Length: 374
Image 1 (cartoon, helix red, strand yellow):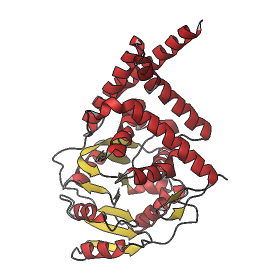
Image 2 (cartoon, rainbow, N blue to C red):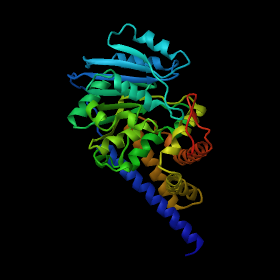
Image 3 (tube, rainbow, N blue to C red):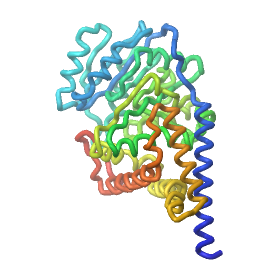
Image 4 (cartoon, helix red, strand yellow):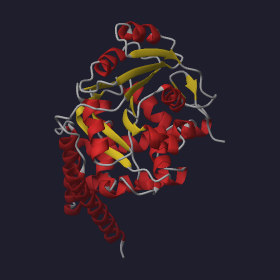
C-alpha cells in the first residue's frame, strides 16, 4: 500500500475509534447511577471525614457544607489537620467550635516519599465510629442532602462503595482544557455496568474527592492502611475492595457536589504532575495510552484541516463525545468541546512531564517530596 493509502487508513481507523468512544459515552450516560433527589433520613451512624493540609484559603466553604448536612441525625464530623503550616488548623477549629458533633485532630506525618493523603485517611478511619464512612476533600462543596442521598444509593443498590463524581468547576483556559477530561475519560472508556462488580484492575474507578464506603467492607480489604504508598489512593482502594468481593464505583455527583481543584496553570501542572505517571500502570502503558489518544483525537482533526472527510468525521465524533460528557456531568459544552484535540495533546504533554519528574525524583506535593524511580 502506498504512503497516502496508509495515511488514509490510519486516519480512518482513528476516526472509527473516536466514533466508538462517543457511542460508548452515550451508552454510559444512560447507565450512570444517580443519587435520589429526596432521600430518607439516614438511620445508621455516619462519619463525615475530611483530611486537610495547607487549605486555609479554601477549606471554609467545604467544611461549612459538611457541617450543615441534612437528614443525617447520627452524624459525626472529624477533620484531620495533616501537618499544615499555613494556619489551616486554626481555621478548622474556629469553624468546628460551635458544633458538638465535630472534632479536629492533628495528624501524624506519613512515611518519607509518600504523598500523605492515604495516611491521613487511614487515621480518620481509625477514629471514625460510623457504619458508613464519608471522605470529602477540602475543595469539595456539598449540597445540603448530598450525604443522605449518597448513603441511600449505597444501601439501595447493595454496593460497598460509591464515588459521587462532583461537578468540576473549571475557570481559566488551562482548567477548561484539561479538567473536563476527568469525567470524559471514564464515560468514554469504562463500561460502568460491568465495572461495579468486576475484579479486573482496568475496570475500576473511584474519585477520592467524595467517597462513601461501608465501614465493614473497608476493614475487610485492609482500608487505607493497605494503600498508604499509592499516589492514586482512590483507585488503589477500589481495587483492593473488589479483590475481597466488594462492589462499587463512580456515580453521578454533579447535582450534589462541586469541586474546584486548581486555581490556575501552575497548580494544575503540579497536581497532574504528581499523579499522571501512576495512572497507566507503567511507562509502557502510559506511552501506549498516549499514542492511542493521539491516534483517535489528534490525528483525525489534523487530517481534516487538509480536507480529509474521514478526519472531519473523527473530529465531529470527538466533539460529540466531549459534549455528551459535559452535559451528563454538569460541565461546559461550548466552545470548549471544539478544543478537544488541544485538550488531549496537553494531557499527553502533562503525562510525559510527570514521568520525567518521577524518574528524576523531582516531584513534590504540598511541600512533600515524592518517591521517585526505585
